[in-house]
Length: 324
Ligand code: AMP
Ligand code: TRP
Image (cartoon, rainbow, N blue to C red; front, side, top):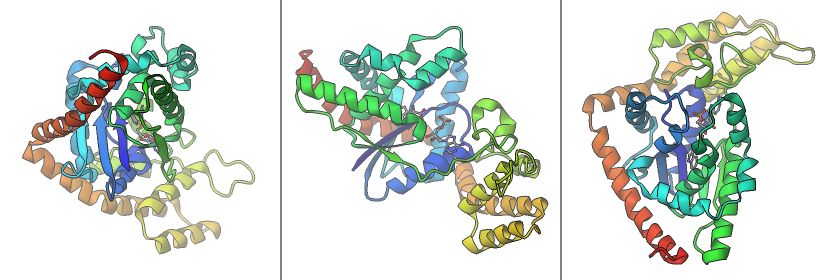
């Protein structure tokens, strides 16, 4: 399979990103041809993205991804704007995209409702996303649930192009993660996200003290409704624990909880220890990688490999539509 996925360089990677997405990206490298893209053009649709912050965030994210286990030798890891064919294909695909379909995109409607100035990039965002995928003739795309609609649109765009200009693009299928949805420690009613502020996420590379503090102060006791056996906050701590700790340990703590003997302070201490154990190698590798300072070269090599594929496909696209 040829796998493509993208992630925006907006802020640090947190536990939700890692367990919900990146860990799967790493696993998919086994036996597949993977292409992973840091989508900086997409990040520009966010009006708050500052130039210096964006410049830096792309490199930091690349370092984080490699530290997590993305292998830039096996996999093509690159920055979207290093391959300008993405925007060229985006325009051409836009011309086989239904305006009506774009107006029905949930993510666009939500974002547009939240802000006063709605830029055109936000409206075109899903077309660029389709171009990202189709430019590499990728057939599988690991994504979260919220991206399924965009992927459905990418398939419609591929079909429309193929039927008008002849079969070229495969219809890309989603690979849905195993669904570890991690909630905010400070408000377990919301998902862990960068958008709500630092108390709502735990960064993978955050200092130990800060992680310990966030876990210690995790909300455990509110939001219990009759019939629920565990409050959402405690359930969330168990969700994370299950991802990092041995099964017997989790089973033992669950048993203590059922029997009403579990002290939340103990649960939190165990979680902190197990989490730091699991993240230890990633954090160590991250420190080594940034000390090496070779990330620009790594990304340039990734872009060169991506571009070889992209150029070839664009040559064909131009010929099909009559632009050659
Ligand atoms: P975002 O930066 O929020 O757009 O997320 C990037 C990727 O991480 C997406 O593919 C999401 O599916 C995944 N992700 C983000 N937040 C969470 C979360 N709290 N739990 C699980 N997965 C998440
Ligand atoms: N929109 C995706 C997200 O927010 C990021 C993305 C951009 C993407 N291009 C992509 C994901 C192509 C998969 C394939 O998560």
